[in-house]
Image (cartoon, one colour):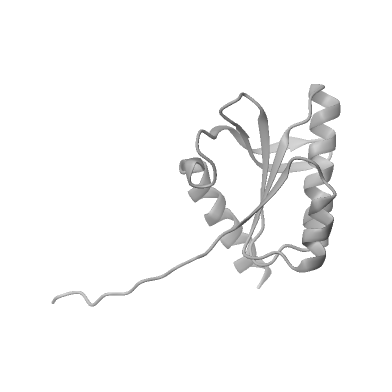
Length: 124
């Protein structure tokens, strides 16, 4: 199950780097899988106003650890660059406890993804 989860995270991330506009108009890719001294940022973007945006992707429901992880990246980036970035956490859902934790972090947005399959018969 862990390898399926990692694969799904990678697939979502691959999709997002080509379609950042689907989560926010005007977002542009700066880099992905950015190594820092406190972990690896999934996607680093820039918004229409020129602000950096740290994007973390989770397969399945977000857990408390995801809030700690993105808070760590936001804090590191603020200290390193001297100005606070925005954060976007993407997951399939956000339990109530995670929403409370996220509300305590300024400039953090939660975005839920949906995966849809459609099937159609192919003529022979």
